[in-house]
Length: 118
Image 1 (cartoon, rainbow, N blue to C red):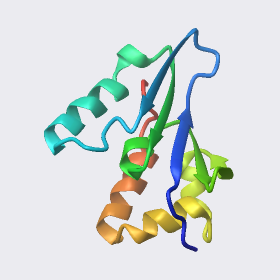
Image 2: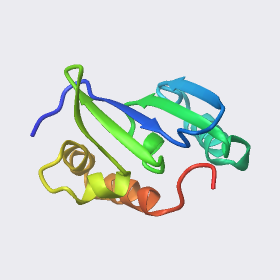
Image 3: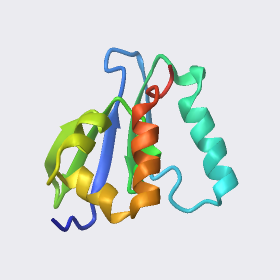
């Protein structure tokens, strides 16, 4: 399955009173800055904030509570990253596989860990 120009939208803590929208927060930065952005996103400071992240990097959203995979403007699938990775033949699983064994394993490991903000 080939998925072109897929955007990932991840939502968490839908009952929170604050919303943070990030559009490609790690798309064009160096690895050190990427780690700093991830540390902020994963920290306790955003624990009570609903976060909407649009991203093309699977590692950016692998530890979000819910991931919506978009394809050609339509929802291809939506669930937890763990469940999406379990779906053989699914869009998210196909994209993880396309990264190669090492990167795919990194996505799986991050998805298996605690969700953001916990």
